[in-house]
Image 1 (cartoon, each protein chain N blue to C red):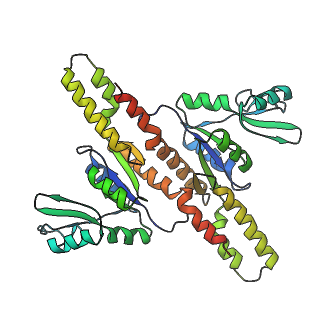
Image 2 (cartoon, each protein chain N blue to C red):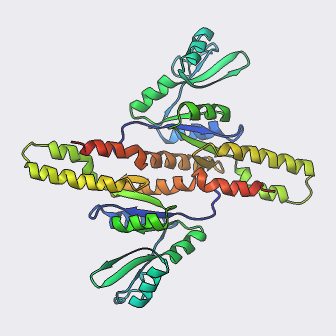
Image 3 (cartoon, rainbow over the protein chains, first blue to last red):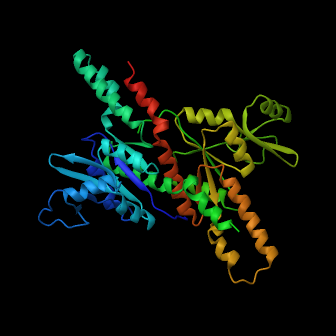
Length: 203
Length: 203
């Protein structure tokens, strides 16, 4: 298939859904997809390498990157900053590689603003599918517990609305196959291809 | 994955691109996808079965179906009419099956109007990919031949613009894998799923 640029695939979802496990399994399945490397202000640990595990930055340098719009998203955890450098992602994409970014929901929503042409996949906990059963289930749950579960589910669904795809993580292998299919399909989208064909026949 | 309804997948493209071959190979790969059965006014041939090869209709009955909007598309070839009954497609889809319709470009554009929620795949001849090379190629082609090739390519690209996906038929197995990926991905699209999740948490 013709292609000019790769895709940025943003894999996100509620904490505990298994983003890391799915991403790791995808990495074993498919050598074509590249993985985004984050910038951080924390010190390198034993055995970590610049540009492989992280790009290591001083706090001043990180602040400058924020101000100059060089990060697709960032967050602070305790004393350190973590973020996704736009330059690395764009370099990979322009070389024709699909890049995956595994990230928390709040970060994904930032990326949606800074890189709207990305492909946003919401990894879904399998149990929401059983939500109705669980909630209505044995009829022994307290009203408060039921309300609480409904609120969590509603929040998840409100966030899902910002994404392009919903992938249920019922089994890691199934989730990986769905993500691979989404990447293949997105690379066949007419909107991403037609300008290449139009250029081809331009006089 | 949750699903309520199947998809209508419309596989089309220029004549000679290999729609039938790709569809046949897809049929061997995947037993989940159903195939649309056409209506026709031509007489059944030896060994053909009602509802398997075609739905056999009188000309009066076919005209009535056209007038009552019961066909997603139709065309006349010589003395006979051929068309796609909406009822059969909708029955399969409501039972949760994905249905594929392999069809000429003019028919696909009719379906686009009568069933816009379908997934429209343009099967691309592999040689357009080599178009620039062929056109600019050895520099020995006549001006007329080059113009003719450019016009064919432009017409193909104008039609492609009406579709959702472009799949290059460089190898049948590759084309089949891309189509299977598109079907999987479309079934993960948030727009097709979110109302199911919203219903789940409705009180």
